[in-house]
Length: 115
Image 1 (tube, rainbow, N blue to C red):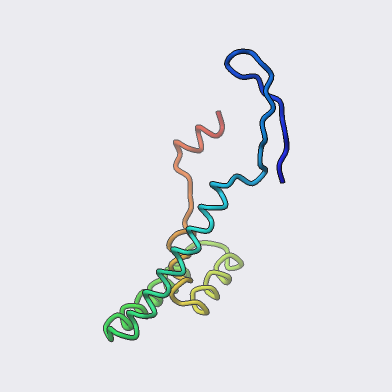
Image 2 (tube, helix red, strand yellow):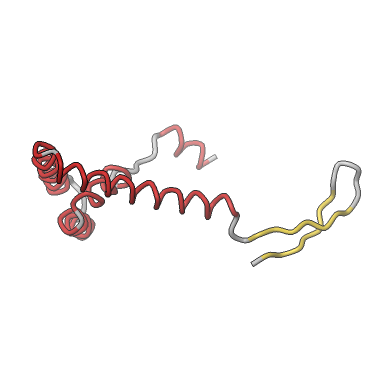
């Protein structure tokens, strides 16, 4: 979806500009994240097939991830979906967990947002 808006340029002239609601860079970054995640999952699966010790390391990481979710002080309603994701999708689950689970803002950013 695109919309045409009128803006004033440097020469104080009114110029029509086409604006997209969903920027191309946003779509491209989402696609690149999906491709990267798929490649990491594929590489991990291939490593588990060819390197026996990697399979053990994968399960140890999954156990560590599950224990850290269980030992967190969050609401159980928040823990259960993470546990299901980590246990159902072992490679992608703990990858997503380590990237997105503990997203707390620092005091500096909270102060900046309040201002």
